[in-house]
Image (cartoon, rainbow over all chains, first blue to last red; front, side):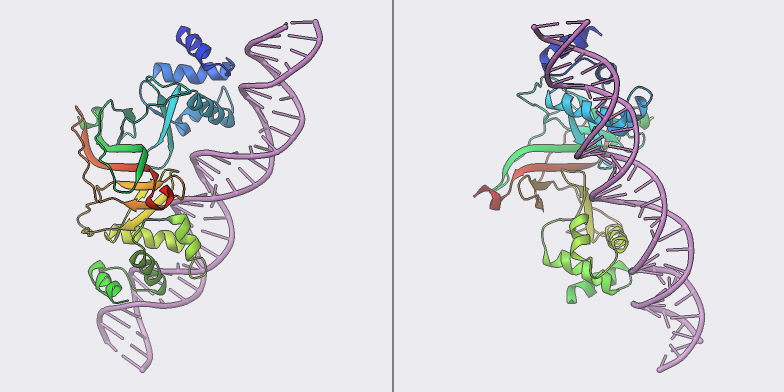
Length: 136
Length: 136
DNA sequence: TTTGTAAATGCGGCTTAGTTGCATTAAATT
DNA sequence: AATTTAATGCAACTAAGCCGCATTTACAAA
């Protein structure tokens, strides 16, 4: 759990509890995004539902993870690359497989044109279709 | 309610009840997208919650309206332009104001690049920021 | 116009995601 | 070891959305 320690130093206020370590480990072992529902199921023997929600909140505030809505309106979380509590860079699109529901972060630039008389602050782009595994 | 009649002819299976007419009227008077929550509130004296959900389902299946998730994961619906029950053309992005929550359909082309080893079937693009009214 | 039937509706209850308040536990600092 | 305060567990709550079933109603056929 070496990486976790490094990260926790940067986080500042967050205490390193067993629950925090367990959630952190999932995001370090899994590159794909995780739905809250799935995380609660994975962690149900180790901690309370509420604790999962609260840890995810704290992690997001500290820029360790970012959140977005999946195709069913459920909340998903994934590791951030290059974000911290002061600066969030989560403008990348996400992909969700319509067959297995898996969600991936895409390191892909999508050009958003200006919209007349509107000020665009953020974007939520979800691409849907078949993932690599489900195509075969 | 002339337009409604024309549309209902194309719909085929949908019966023209008072409830159907009431929902249809809202979408004809209002260009902006509507959240289900708001529609239920608007129509609470005229019909049951469940009926609103079911009418929206039917309308979507018949290509009269299309649905998508807003920034809070809630379901929104808006009129379709050029869709029917056989063919849906809803690839346009949506804009939601972070101050007043209003949602607009944008007639804007957004270029989605190919994603390696993935088959993209549909997209959900939500732009967030300040709408024209809230900027001033 | 009346009648038959299948679609549409109302109602009540249910499921599930997500939140809140409060008492208790435990991490970190001294 | 004592103290402080963040973190947790628990239970109850809210709200969106869905489902089954009895009843009503639109519409087509007689």
